[in-house]
Length: 307
Image 1 (tube, helix red, strand yellow):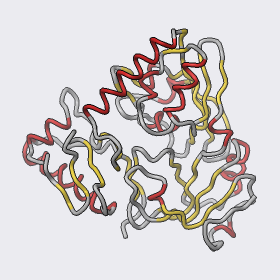
Image 2 (cartoon, rainbow, N blue to C red):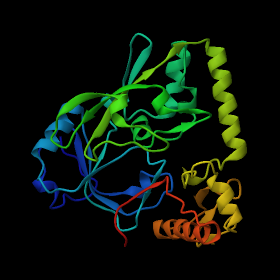
Image 3 (tube, rainbow, N blue to C red):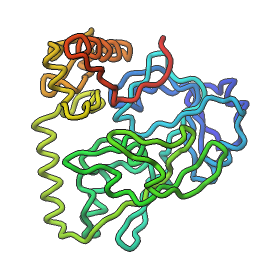
Image 4 (cartoon, helix red, strand yellow):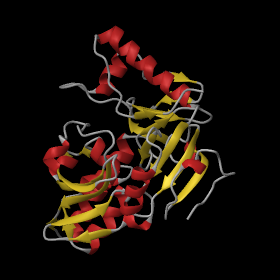
């Protein structure tokens, strides 16, 4: 099945026929929490793993391909993304199954959707994931974590499709998960995760979830256009303290500004471009380096080309 956002562009004519859909010239501002970014030349929504595998095997060999998830930790530049952007958004990638002491979830499932699964099935252990914005697939690449737990603490294995279209299961240890990072080939696409769970009273689970949610609302920007923590915490230090020490807590560039609530969050306060946000972030990196001799590392993923 072929679907198109606008007119069929020349790139689509070179792509294999799929059971999912292609959309052309898709504004990435609709797929990121910052609500900025130029268009994806083509966006591909695979129907299932076999469809994704076929696409990767049959596509032109030199075609640029990347994957996006929920867009909660992503900054797409104003020139957009050439080639094909893959998004795992079909029902297949949002489904889940229950096993003995574990559940397997599609990579396109929102972290927040775990809440209903856990409460209805009297499960615990994944409360911290529920509070993290985005999709489960993206949580692997960054080894997402909060409230003292990280994905690596609960991940059993992942199903991947590699650049050659091979589908296989990979144990968690082979993903080399560490603080806000992982080490595995760039052409691996995570399509599902198997996570450890434990029996737990729903009232206790809900209490933990609510406490974590309330903490975020109190201490982090809420209901604004942001992509979460902008910079990783250097070992033994806090990024927000370094940003504040460097005098960056009140910085802004056009509609891009440092959050008044938490200065390790950048916010699109209205009318910001991706260039504004990235320039603000790079300005902070430079000022922190000048003040402390420490180079902050971006936690937000940046992709695409400058306009």
